Length: 123
Image 1 (cartoon, rainbow, N blue to C red):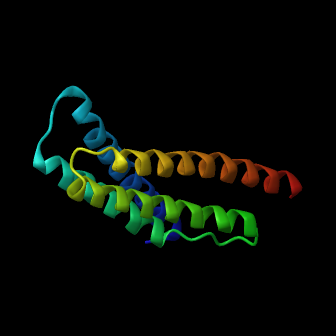
Image 2: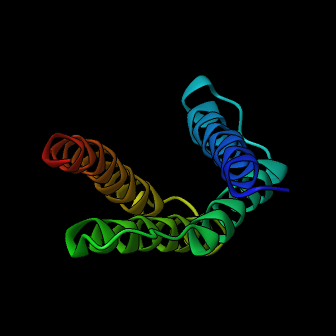
């Protein structure tokens, strides 16, 4: 399997896991509160972390390399958030970590795109 196919598969797995986390985090807003939702949310967070740990930036731009590390930190925040869903029932601490990781991930996605376009213009 070549590198582009592998990266494409990783991206699809990442999208699936992030959507799983989104659905499991949104269901309590609609009154659905089941024990299995915590497990599904934790599975999505774990898969997200695994994918982020396997993603590598092969270029020479140190700023983009740091942004990739920030994505890994966001995935770690998701895993801590998942752990809090089990241990801190009734509090919203897990939501705070979920939102912080999400904001970090959104920032990284915009900045990586911007920096990649800047590098393309230099060439």
